[in-house]
Length: 566
Image (cartoon, rainbow, N blue to C red; front, side, top):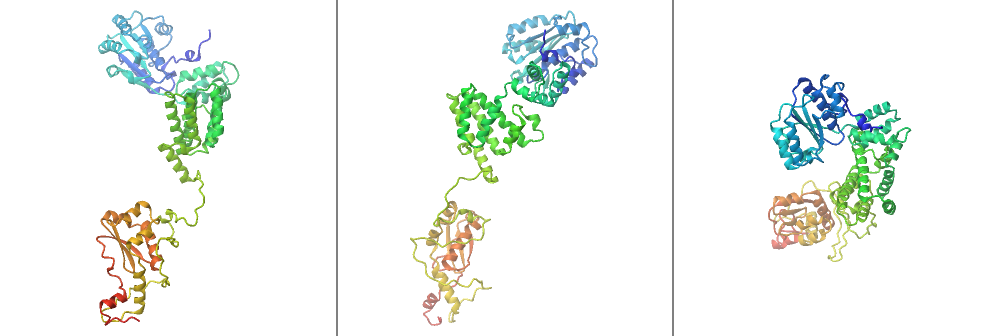
C-alpha cells in the first residue's frame, strides 16, 4: 500500500529533523542527562516538526538503549510506541477532544503507573482548541504531576493558550524552515524515491511550501504522480499556477495604464470563475515579490512566494519604483480586506484596478507619496497644460532662493495712474552718498535732481503694495499688505520694512520676498535699492528718516533765502 511521502519520511531521530537545531539539541541534552520536564509546549506554524519531535521525545524518554539522546528505534519500547501497540503513550487531537470530560478521562488514567514503559506520555495536538473548563482541569494535574507522567502540548496559536498553562511548561518555538534547507531535503528524498526533481523545481516547491516541510513533501508527492521530470513548468501545471500568468498579464496592463485592456482581462477572469478575493491575493503576492526583488535583490530569492517566474518579475520590476510598489500593495491589501464585506465584489475589484492604472485616483497618503516620488525622479510627466499667454504673471518659482537674479517684466496694470517718464540714472553706485545741503549752502545740482526724482517717483506704501500683489506668494503677501503688521518706507536709496515683531522679520527677511520688492522699486524709481526689514514703528511717510530731501521743499521751508537751485 502506497504511503504518502510526508508520512514515509517522518524524522525518526532528532538529527533528521530539518531546520530546528535550536530545539533538537536541547531535547537531546535533556534526554541524555535525564533532566526532563514533566510538561513541554511546542509552538510554531504548520509542518515545522512539532508532532514529529513530540513522538521522538516520547520514544527517547522510554527507549531502552538511547544513543546520545536519540531513540534507538530497535528496542521493544521504541517499536511499540511507533506502531501504537503501547497504550501508555497516547496521542489525541484537542480539536475533537476539547471537552472537560475528555480531559477528566485522561486525569483518571494518569494516576496509574505505566505498564510497559518507564513514563506515561500524553501528546495533545492543537491544545489551543481546549475549552476554558478543559484548561482548568488540565491545570490541576500540571500543577503537581506524578513522577511517571509527561505532557507534550503542541499548538499553532500560542496566544490562545492561557498563561497559567504556559508558565508550567517548557516552551519551544519552532521556526519556519528556510527554503534552501527544504530544497536540499527534497532533493535527497527525490533521489531515494527515484523522482527526477530538478534544482529549479525543488527551489520553487520550497518557496511555495512557505516554511513547512510537510507541505513541501505533499507538493512533491502531487507533482511526481504523473512520472517524468519535475521541473518548474511541471510544478506550475500540476499546482494550477498557470493562472498566475494571466494575473501577471493583468498587472502588466495596469502598469502600462491601459485601463481598457485591464478591465477586459478582469472580465475574462471573472467569467472563467476566478474569485475576486483570490485574484486580489494573487496580485498582492505579485506586487510583494516585485517589492522584495526591488529592495532586497541579493536575499530576495529566499523571500519570494514562488508563484511567479523570474522573467515576469524582471520585466515588471524595471518599470516600477519602490514608492509606486508600496502604493499598489497598500491598495490591494485594503481591497482584499474590504471584499469580505462587499456587496458587489466585482465592482470593488474594478475600482481597485482603475486606481492601479491611474495613480491619481488613489487619494491615500501612499498614493500621494508615490506620485511625488515619480515627479521628483522624472519618471512621470506632469499633466500637459497649455503654454501661458504673455499676459500671465511670472511663475512663483522664479522667486525661490535658487532662482536667477530678479528681472521684473514691465507692469501692466490698467487701473494704475500713468507712470512718470524718466531717464534712468547711470548703473553705478557712488562710494558714499553725497553730503546733504546745509541751511545757507547751495545744494549740488546732481543731488537735487536725484532726490527730486527718487522721492517723487515713490507712489507710497499702500500703492506699492497694490502693485506688489501677484509678485509674492499669497501667504507672504497677506503679511506685507497688513498695515497693522508691516509698513514700508522709501528714503531715496533703500526700502525699509518696519514690522511688529521678530517673527514677522524672520518671515519677510528672505530673498523670496526682498528680491521682488527690489525689482519693483527699480521699475518705479530706477534705483538699484536694498530692501531691509526692521522691528519697530515706521516713521511718517511724508518725512523719510535719514534720506535725501526734496530741494524745492527745503527751499520753501527755509523761506528761499539760502537754497540755490540751478
